[in-house]
Length: 380
Image (cartoon, rainbow, N blue to C red; front, side):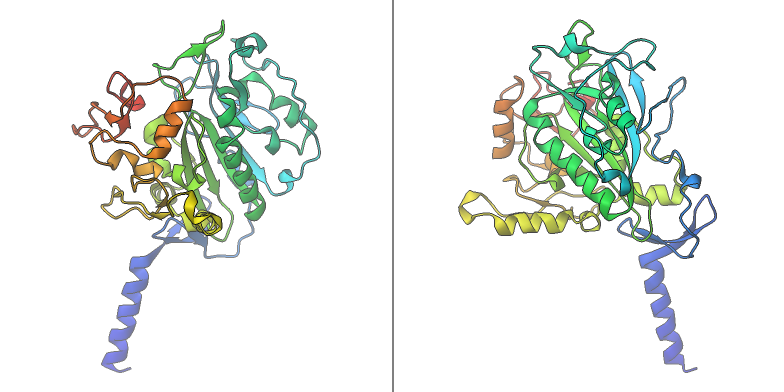
């Protein structure tokens, strides 16, 4: 073999190694990891759903109890009178609707401390917003009925519940159908500073989240969403963040049963094309009238690795939802944020940089309208 051919093979091997690497799952299966967070099995072992039971359940804190129902599991927060998180696997078969909504809300008999009730929500101005959607439970009469337990409900503004939150729920069902199954963890972001309603003092969240994992071959991938609890017509892609970032905000460790090397790769990356969101955003732009607003452009934000964010955004600030805190400190906000602030609960008039301090000792770069000058993560 010639010296030039050997050099060529060495170059190709180095190039391949830098783009992807092999790993072994906890069940002994070999996988190939890609830099954008995707990975594929290298063997032909049939998918074993029994070996992955409970994959959707987050890491449990000391004395944290999991309540398991037919279609979903949850961890209940008595202090906030709603679930800390709700988790379930949604398969392609389960997206076929066999049973209609019951619309009969009731207390969860498995919550010993009792849950919220009808009186807490009556005349409150809030919808009884599902965490595990009723639309994901139509495959079972029992699962549908249990989805109306108050343990699965959070107070949501009607325009949020029936708008952007509903769009996200529909998108997750579409992914379950396209990818055979997805694992979903969803819930409110619960903090000590939240306002409350009703005699049971049900907390009113300022943010809601979803974490979604596709663990079928090919193209295993993960994605997370963090949504402000305000009406918003923005594309879903503008609420995408990495699961690592969502863990920092919520204090929840998602998908802990994944092997460490896979978990690290999946949860640290954001790949819009993997989920078809980049294509959808471009299609929305193509169908819009030129006079209806700015076209999407690449986000001006910078990732933790120092690279430019690859999300697309139509925000006038030039930053997507995940990097809006990186805009300049002039106190200005984009037009979309201004419109949202008009329809949300009263806050301070001007957006300012949070005065909180990160774990590394630097000033927090999030923007906030809270009168305290701090974002929700730093006590605002």
